[in-house]
Image (tube, rainbow over all chains, first blue to last red; front, side, top):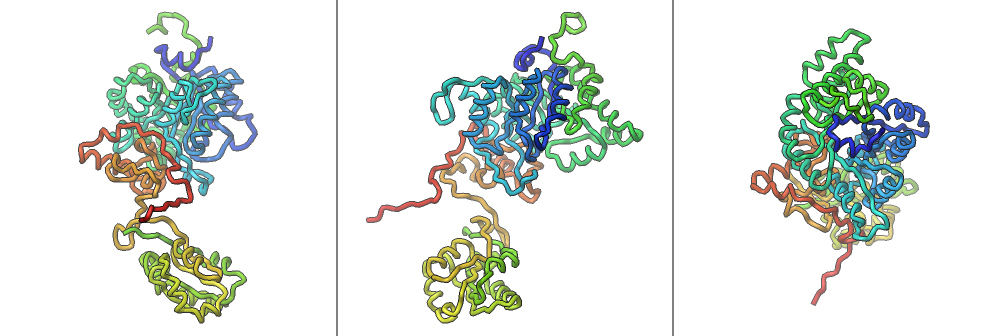
Length: 309
Length: 217
């Protein structure tokens, strides 16, 4: 039987989520294919919200689609494109249509995307959006008015464990937890020793932490991220490993690295789960999951001794 | 000192704006636009020469001491004759100056500059935007640095995930405001201020257009 993402978070099971980027246009075939491929293999599917400030099919529409296909959507909401009226309205809509999980993000800057002259809104920030959800759960809106029907969400946020300097990020991480975050997805991590140090700090807060795993598809991608993506650091040994992969097996190597990391995170109970991002290569996620030995997906584990461990 | 920071429009755009006007008077400003090297004596002379090259008649030119000052009408009166012979004034000042002059003449007034921000001169030829006149000053809690202005996203509760070694995700030449705030508060032993949850801003302290009246005796 399928369980809600919130139930899974509370169950002690190693949590497995992934994400889907909605299409640019109304052709939903590929997204539906990815939803079908992943919905039973993960505990929740993130739907990105104009990721990298590139205009796309809305995350809320994609979340409904996941719902319709029997999956468990995690609605990403950024503060970049909507003011507090529009954000609250979308939260009302999401709740009314059975979307129960929201990931609150500030959002990338408009100028990194494909509508560079658009106005960035940022009326709220991620902490304020989390607090807004908790206010709306008490039956009030941000104007202090009564809601005729409140909302209820499992709300999460993100953290960048490799940011430099790290302390301001950690202070914000704590703020997000105080504002109501129940789970935290991290920016992509590759250096597990460094991530373990972050977890030593983060564990006492009691919030569920899902380590961000981005599939490496080439060594050039790794070097590009090191140079251009704030807070992402791929160690040289992984870049060398990708470089050494014979032609035609590079993607396999990326899958192997991702699966190896996930296995280590699970085996050593480094954190509560992983969030797999295979930007544009969603069809490879099942392979990563299988290779990591996490093929059970959303099913409640049967009480075999080996699974009880 | 606060300065109105400008940059010159592309000359093709200026020509488009001057379409239909043949006799042009060019005005600069002796204050901010001179400092920004967008509308001082040199730039006014260069603009006049370029207009001539492009078939315009330049009826005269001048640099008003302070274009946004109400007294600039005196400068207009001094140049009554050439202005009477003009169809338009091309103004190389910020939009405060352009609008002040536009109220004082019946001629068409065309801006030759774009006004970028009201900024502070932080060094020779260096100008930074540090206040955006939002109406609810937060800098008492942010180490005297305004995140509404100095953070690209105007965030109130700390840095976003795009902060990169103390720089902003949109431009490695721009500092991350929240890294600066963090360092300042840390130095002052006041990091608890950064831990405080800031409520959403009031964007309508003074609904645009701002207008105040001081009660006078």
